[in-house]
Length: 314
Image (cartoon, rainbow, N blue to C red; front, side):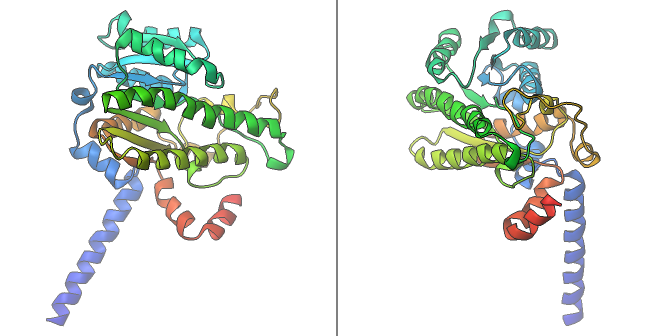
């Protein structure tokens, strides 16, 4: 009898190890996200006809998200500072989808100009009559040592990534509270959970977003149809590194080449958006991971922060 129990335990342990290995090889997201991809509601059914406002839509994650959402029939408001780039994105959306010209609104928006956020929100509402989903994606990264970086760089990072985001959220949330429904999705980062060298200001802004939206979620318990969703990507294959803050506000990064590790663990943007739209369709709350390799490596960071910090620095 004891021999049989031991064999069963051994087989169960082996099966668990195989499962963990498969997750390691497949981990574009945590198990909750992967379940939503496998068995959840279909984005084309849940998001078609919904009004989705995407900030930072002129490049990178925001641009690709606009393409993916247009394909499934979501009505789009796309925002960024560069209106010409937004028009380029809109043109491609029209080419790859069945949306009409009026179903994609181009809206120039500077997140650091907080006085313009109410008018921008009203423009979207006037055009579509509602906002079903706000995707807070606008922001910039950083690549500089803290000791070499001017403090005005940190101020600019927080103004854009944090204060600009929560300012726009406040105006859109008022509308969602009136309707008693909606989704606010914030593209945070794995750096909102962990730390990394050369990104102290960026990490601070993403930690601030994590704290803010996790707190906001607890304040909205009277509105169960309003979802607060934090998305925490790891590295992605995009051009975001070309538009980062450095040690000075007027200095841009030059001749940057992604490392082998970054490229190896950075799946294409399209893979990310399959999981993101699946999460949106499922109405998932809380923290969603799309962090190939990093979703597993973040566990030691939370359990052994000192050792993980030393390893990351090396």
